[in-house]
Length: 143
Image (cartoon, rainbow, N blue to C red; front, side):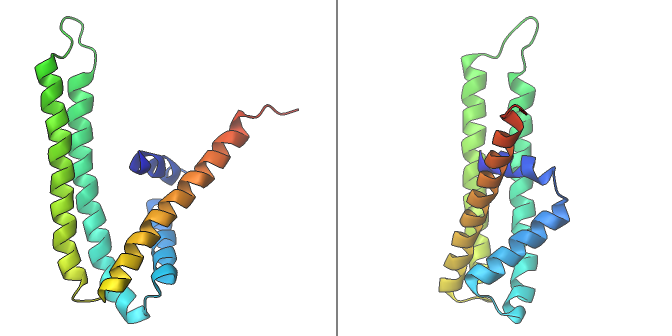
């Protein structure tokens, strides 16, 4: 859910602008030095790209297989397969994140990696709050 909401918000700003804001937020929150930041963020955004690809493939699988078909709707077995594919995608992402943590540890102390993870979560929560406030403004009738 967070990913889709953040993706919707990204439609209102460029991908580059979103990444720059995220990078600034994480750098400030985790107190990364410029040297740490220069080494860390290429890996960080590489991981984000890989995670996005995995999620995209899973979303396309669901979207393609759950559309109403004129003659035969998906069977329970097909839905089971989709549920398993989503679960497999989550496992694949978790393994990927674990591999990148090993790479991060060569650049950052473990405490800063934890701070980076906290910063990422906080940034996403703040983006969701901003989006929610924006949606509320759109829903209010102009008097």
